[in-house]
Figure 1 (cartoon, rainbow, N blue to C red):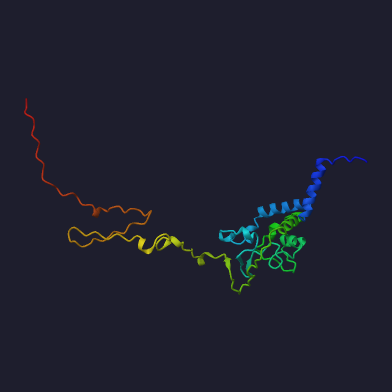
Figure 2 (cartoon, rainbow, N blue to C red):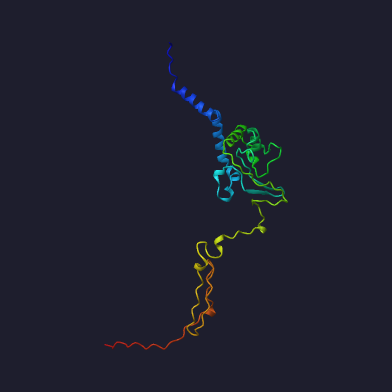
Length: 247
């Protein structure tokens, strides 16, 4: 019987790698495409507008790219929310092809023909190569599906049902009062809140003297005027000290 020589280790490694990739549903070339897409999504920072909680300062990465609850108002057009980018078939991109996703990214056009709102930075993304746009699409298809239907879109006359980013003219801007600006601190009960000190009685009349109001921090200290300064009252003349006897 003819004796078979063993395969080189490099060939064995390639066969094993190909088998693992096939079992996972991806080819080695597709794995490189997905890795490229993941890199692009991370530097473009898609999570800012498409991950729940990010625009509120608390991103929920258990629902990564699952759609935002904060919408952007476009004056005259309405309010638009960053949609679900996961492959969920009901609320995400599960029924979109890679080409349809790439077209939405670089041309701002959905499969149904609608044009994406101006909050989507198509003017920047149109500079992506077609290969990079497809890499992003391939990566999005690998995400965990998240069932989350974002609100809207809402027209200019409709009332949004969730948070809204709105650009206001300066004459309509009102600062939000911080929670600690008035009343007791959250860690204190009303009984623990400090009370103003009682005025001390005047020595002459026994009637409490008014408590002076402290000047605001940084306010200039008033200088005395000439009428506020009184000359000292003359006291008794001092005696001339005794002179030492002349020698």
